[in-house]
Amino acid sequence: MKFHILTLFPEMILGGLNLSILGKAAENNIISINAVDIREYSREKHRKVDDYPYGGGAGMLMQAQPVYDAHRVVTGGRPVRTIYVTPQGEPFTQMKAEELAGEEELVLLCGHYEGIDERVLEEIVTDYISIGDYVLTGGELPAMVMVDAISRLIPGVLGNDISSEEESFHNDLLEYPHYSRPECWHGKKVPEVLLSGNHRKVAAWRLEQSLRRTEERRPDLYARYQAKEALVRQLSREKRNHIHMMESLSRGYAEILYVSQAVYIKSLKSEKDIKKREQSENIEVLLYDRRNKICMVSARDIVSEEDLGHFLPESTEYIISSQTLAEQKQYQRYLTCSIMLYTQKVSLPLKYKEIRLLSPADLPLLECFGAEFSCGIHWEKQSNVHGESAGNYIWDRMEKGALYGVFAEGKLAGVAGIHKGGGMGLLYVDTPYRRQGIAMSLVAYVVNRILEKGWTPYGYVPAENTAAEKLLEGLGFYTASKKVDIYIKLQKILANEI
Ligand code: ADE
Image (cartoon, rainbow, N blue to C red):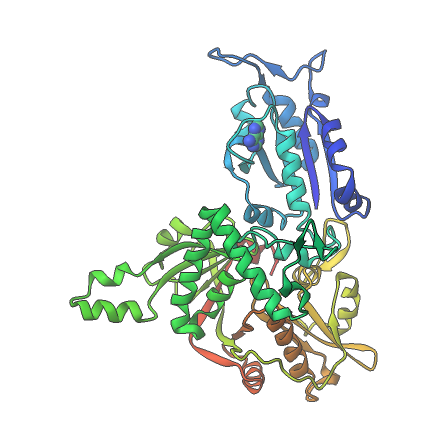
């Protein structure tokens, strides 16, 4: 990830971000920090960049031209997401950090004095973000806060990638308390359960602590968590058809944008009718997975482009809909799939055991698969930020630790993994290794990894792929009665990004 920070105080940025974990990440080329001195772009003799505001008022304004020129040079005219840090922006949250961590390049613009000439903001800024409801003397500290929060979500920045998954604010809960040696300090003992070695009990205790702490310290977050849990319970009345939504909520990926049952109640007559409806599956939901830019819809009253437009965040790249949507200008139906899910809690046995997580360094191993390997996605070679050649989507999945490979005779024989959004998929077994139970073992392996996290394995199977459906049924998966349509943003199709 490349950060370009446009500032009047580049030393402040470099002094703050070139140390410790972020300094290491920059040294290892996982992130880069480019602090750009806006003054360098002044056309005035004394490198002046500010002037009086028209209409009067206290203080000075940063002028449009130096900011614009600095931005032009940094971006070279490419459409790079550009954030103006300002108390007038939308609040910076963990969810926002996750969304921004998906970008390859970001510009952060730091204001000073009374602000920046509105006209240049209109031309270059894509997002206005505030780090809190207080006013600082300049944008440097907020920009540094954002770079820190975003960077630590980038794979490889923290040594242990699992730690960013489990921490405070994941799934709207604060983190549980931690203890280290000695076992007794100032007369205070480490809670007994943590010494028990019983992972299930430890996990239950930690969840309980998280709940209690969140309720006490952040009632606002707790209320949001409870709303999500209530929705998961409601959706679970039709678990097979709603598993993708339930998992997105309970894994902490999705937020609720819309939920209602009232629309039906209008047309119903008796109290009994209403009760029946409330218990039925016709719950109207629209969820958004900000990290993966996926919108999930199961709402009969939001099918037109206009209705959807009210709710869909602009960044949405995929829509997964349980209802056929009206013709869309921006999105095209790409696939119709069955949802399949594995509801048992027991892990599956493996015939082939030579299976491991793949990393981006393993990408060359996939090249022997040839053109037939597509896994339902287009994988044109593309350059990533570091200039490496990579299959766009596959590279992303490897980087996120979501692709597994099976090896036979020392060669990569096949892969399977987890799609953006959490559904299983990406299954491919190379021709010489088929009909030997390898695919079955691979899928079983992925199922077991998902079960270890306490999640429910599910996947989208393209309607015509009966082989995949049979395979999953053989492992104990059920098929939902409703199919889903997957829509993709036209821009992505045209840019050959899928
Ligand atoms: N600039 C000054 N105060 C700020 C804040 N609270 N958030 C973002 N940018 C700022």
